[in-house]
Length: 443
Image (cartoon, rainbow, N blue to C red; front, top):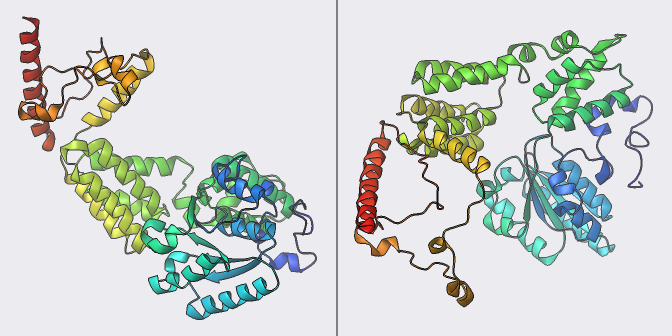
């Protein structure tokens, strides 16, 4: 097949066969230019684009959420290099399938053809199964491409990871999903879709192209002779899930706002209620985990630094366990945040300093703070008179200045709660020592 063939040309099966081939499969791109999204990897000069253009195929791990094009990219690579494309599903496969893939790769090699072994959900293979690929990757028998929705740092063996480049794929953005909808409507010869319905469908899909296309295919199948695909029709098609939990609308943002404010308000019962409401309504637990991490940084802060670590651990636990088991870790983190002491001091300080830097000029770094790795820089007084704090009494160079000349603002003021009580006392003492040292200097 020519790489420049139209997406809706010979790619779509003819006759009755077209009706049984899922829309997502019919719309699978046949060239890089047809791929929607992932421009950080496929744009001009970007890593995967360069691999295609230079003819240098390399082993890799494609890491990203569902429905973002991992399998499509692997197929395109095999096609571009006229390589035998060997697919293994780690969900269904095992040692037998790995051996069969090796034999197919050897047969391709005997016919002077390259081979690409694509392992879907590679994180589901155990260590021994992953190790089985190593000698063949090293010998060049085949190029290994693994696809995973999980963090490869935790789920892929270090030995295999060291022989593969990790490329991170992103969930498709709203604009990307809009383009996909238009392609699908053309392919299905469907009536136009209202903007409101598109927004709801994009919110429902949550960056997953396959989910969007499956829902749209069902919608068109049930539309009949309607002149427009509108919101009411979309709701009837997607049913209770879309009605109960509208990711693109007010209910979504109201629910996450209620969860965040319940944590901030130190109410563990309300926190659990809104967390359960969101998960029961279809919220992506990974999104909820990200919001919990944000709450730990914004509302607990240094009043209890353990909160951020616990939130991160909960997110990692969910990645390992999935639903429903991993949801308990999210609940544990959310309750901890609710009962923890609260401080937004760092949050406020960060906002204040960003605003200050934005409106202020670019002040020069004071000479005594500048780096001086060369003799010339030292001759220009870079680093001169800098006081090394570890050599000072108490490990503190009292009276030393670290802000640019003329900047007197204080951005961080600890809250009188939790650990920040001690931080505040420490800062007060350091500021007292600074003031005393500068007063002595002025004399």
